[in-house]
Length: 334
Ligand code: COA
Image 1 (tube, rainbow, N blue to C red):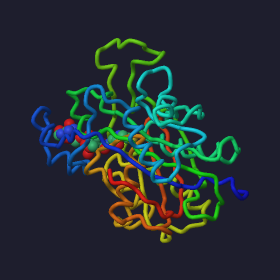
Image 2: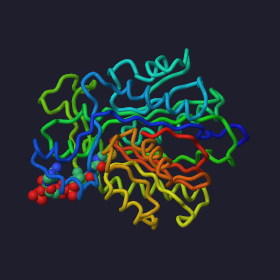
Image 3: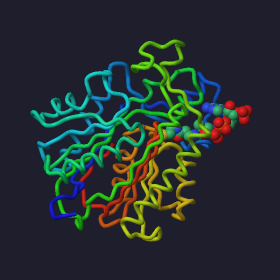
Image 4: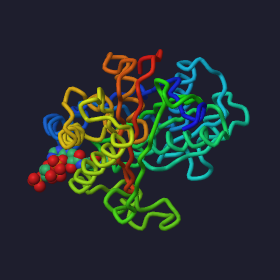
């Protein structure tokens, strides 16, 4: 990479809706228990949007914090990773950009579901490398609970809502905070394993009422998620020339604590190198990695100079990974 063409992490922020839903609240209305949810997923509570609160609202809150963390008012582009835009059309990023006072900045959505944040980072890094813009606000936000069948014990305990955001600026590849390389993949043959069947052009209105909700084959998704996140992580380590032993922190998509520990085991990473906050957030889809980054900085597990590996997996299927040396950032708590 030539000087000035790398994407460097310059600011970070996150936001969670105020309503906390603990496992006991779910156990009171679904055939489940706190013990089952904790032991199978690692989740104790999640945040849920109230009626009227949207992905754009959460993105504006997280994006504002990321801009403040970076000490900048304006960026050249806003890239929003989401699978739950405020409306099917238009994209939500332009509304986020306007509400954050970004004038006529380029703005668009990226939908790679739970891998969306890593895909959006790579997209933003491409905009910087191609000199389209000098800085980008990348937001990962999802109100995933709006896609769930409220009576489905297989999905309701797992997902939560939230938003996380970073500011990327043009910089040099050797700088702390410089991202890359990126490893991105997909396998559309597996789409049916994690899908909302209705609401798109294939089935605009649900044929069965349940078709408007997320359908998930949990065990199959679990297997694919662990294999693919480990593969992608290895590819990035090879490109970076880092050994597994040189990785200080692994920040994986927070889907299930057992998925994270299985990936760590497959890679040979020590369990104490994992950054985990799923106990308080659930799976927040595109928001999960930046929210884990915020918690990691706040609790001192991410320190300047650390070698950090990020990996994600999501519906589609999609997956990907990247790495960076952690920069020195001021970050507000969630
Ligand atoms: N409460 C209590 N019991 C439950 C339950 C719940 N919420 N959900 C399922 N069960 C039951 C099942 O019916 C099954 O009962 P049985 O043994 O009598 O048939 C038992 O618990 C085990 O179910 P199983 O599906 O094998 O559990 P699991 O260990 O695979 O855990 C998931 C289920 C969903 C937590 C797990 O498969 C998973 O995390 N998958 C990946 C999901 C994911 O990450 N999705 C997003 C990807 S981005």
